[in-house]
Image (tube, rainbow, N blue to C red; front, side, top):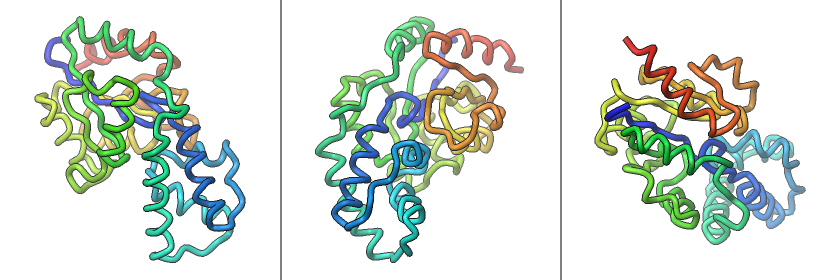
Length: 225
């Protein structure tokens, strides 16, 4: 696996951030006099970033969206979330052991997320994971978001890799579409925040725990032309 760049999504893939993100959404909604969004519903909104969480939450409440209102709520969301970014968020079980195994085989790692880069780094710093990644890129790093393939291409390059020697790891349709657009193989986790059963998205492999990741990556690499 020499020189292989493994690019991870963040929320729902590397880290279970749902508790802090959903709490933040509902704190913001409470300040607006709105009822909380149910945990199960809010969990499936995470993959699109904070703005989408707010917009989709407003739709669930049947409240019309007003541009300035959404911007104000988004600023409130980011401020509260930054102060509570790792209250309950934790890496998914087995992550660090899998990273150790893959690093020993010559892999390098990067993060490609629709989270703001500043918040991504703040979270990974809090969890003492930042040093694991050669690049950490968010929706504002290059001015383009997933599923546009450019964010994945540029993340791989920033990590010092090449798209021909990269694999994407994600949990949602956004991640699968990004990888397909970039012509990069994709492994999906089935414990993340996908709005649909992950198998329906037809990734190259599906894993149910990080203990399965090294074998899944080896399988994908073996199938490369």
